[in-house]
Figure: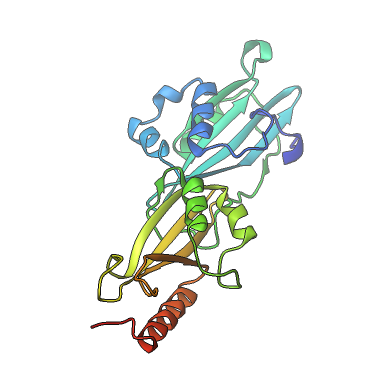
Length: 261
């Protein structure tokens, strides 16, 4: 008989409260699959640098004490593409010992499934696959896995703009704790050097990739529009707010005679 997802064969250890990195999911799959050595080396290498991971039950079949399940494992790669492996779990070997097989192609997984000693007329439960990726499937940036959560904390810590709706708050700080990759892009200006006669402004986008596959960007304004030409850093939740702050600082500096062309 076919079975629902909730009662399907358990193939993963109990989930911990901490997120598991995409490469750790790959390592677990390769460790339990008896034919993992058949996967192309290039495929395994690409997956080692994946940014996010999700899995779901594709189909399940239980009959007369025998069972088999097919799982779909999908990784989000840094170039925005997705790569899927298919896992076949069953107990049709002598002694009913659980076995796992992995395939890079859905058709190959189907051929492997067809050779299992299960009644050919038994019903199959095909379940929809829902990859938990952000609404915008292709990331806006090419992210670099790094100590990104710590980078986010340091960015918020050096922000000197006063608290308000445009400055990141506690919710942003909470989300950044799950960041595992980021990219910094200069969007405007040139590096600011304190003490220069010419007023300096620079705008940077700090883009973070979170464990759930979503993206979060913070906008950092660096400037020397201070009474003593001191370098100052401000952080905003949107590009519009950051650019508005730059315009306000520049106008204020000009009005106070701080700007010397």
